Each structure stands twice: as structure tokens, then as C-alpha cells.
Image (cartoon, rainbow, N blue to C red; front, side, top):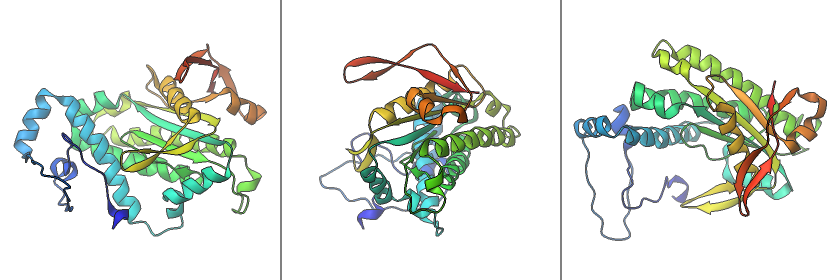
Length: 286
């Protein structure tokens, strides 16, 4: 069925990387619309390639982490499934002129993958994505597609939901960001026994308010809009050169939150938009 389609493959794409990297048996049906040539890659050959081109391992670790998250989500039977449902996300965006977008990103993930190897990194990303997604869901957010070490949640207002009408989407996003910040530090502490290099990573969390929409990228819809771009930019600012977790917010989020949050105003930053570089204010949550 269409709901089980993972992706449309193009020339040069990999598939079966989870089985390759983690020695986990998996099956999938591939349907070709035209004649294609498939190249089989053994584990021994893969190890040799990764040794010379570590970036390949990082890319496969990212896509594998996302697909493992898909597997876990498809096996859930709890009420939180509706938050992961793309139709629910579309309904939220349809009813809201603006939403609060939260973006979380790991600093140093490429370095970490190269250092600890793709197998250990995939296991780490699997746990990371699940913990962060659960936090977003429990805070009343809707999960957009997550890929690799990036997590994106959307917060809007559905008054019919118990408790949501009393708390603004921006405040719920902030609470989620604070919990994610602590959760990453705890996760990093747990994993340092496997490698002390996990302690050299950090997490950046960006929060922005604005209109967004569901676009079409490849076989799946992806959330697009200025708020997505800005929250992504903020998450990258928050983690630059730091080995800790931090939260950055934009001006509109600052205005909405008011005295509910203590912040530090930073020097003006820039984000690339349709008209080129656009200056914006960024605040670090203290």
C-alpha cells in the first residue's frame, strides 16, 4: 500500500543500509518503472569504502536513523500516534495562520560519526530521536519529518484538546525545548561509557513563529516557510562552537513570551531569504 512506501530511489541512492550497518535482517519490495542496474555492496567492501570516505558513513547513519524512527513509530499503539500523522500536521497548519516551529540539531555529529563509527552512531541517533520526539509530543506538538540528527516540531492551538487552550503554543515549545536541552545532556552522559567523545557534542534548539505550509519534496511532503528556515538558522547558531545544549529564539517568540523567559540579546544575525540576506534579532534563553 502507498502508506508503506519509504521513498522513491534515484540513481546513486542507497537502500538496505540498516541491514548493512547493524546486521539487522530487513526486507523490502522494490518496484522499477524502468530498467535499472543494482550494485550489491558487502559489509567487507563497505568497511573499506568508509575508511577512505567517512562522509558516506555519516550520510547513511542519518538516513538509517530516520528509518529506524519510522519503524518505531509504526509500531506504536498509544494516543501519541496522531501527533506523528502527516494528516494531523496538515490539519494543524490549515487551521493556524501562524505556528511555532521548534528545531533541534546536534553539534559535532559528523565528527562523532567519523570517530565512533556508523553502527554506534545509528544506535545513538535512534535513542536520541525517540526521546526528543516524545518530548515534543508530550508538550502538545506535532512532529514533522525528522532526518538524522535534526528534530522538528510544530506547535499550534487546538482549544478542544484538554489543557492546550490555557498554554500558548510558544510557551509549550519553550517548555519542550528546555526538556530537550536537559534530555540531551542526560543522554550524552549515559553514552559516554561507550565513548567519551559523546561529551564533546552539544545540541542547538531554535524556536521561531511564523506561517508555514506543507510543500512537496520528493515522495513526501515537507514543511516549508520562513519560520522553518529561521528556526533552523537559530539551532545552528546555538550550537556553534559549544559542547552544551542551548536554546535561541527569534524576536516574535520573544515578544509573545514576554516575562515568561529570561533572555540575552545577541548581535544581529542574517538568514538567507528570497530577497537575499535578511537581518533578524536572536535571543539566547538563559
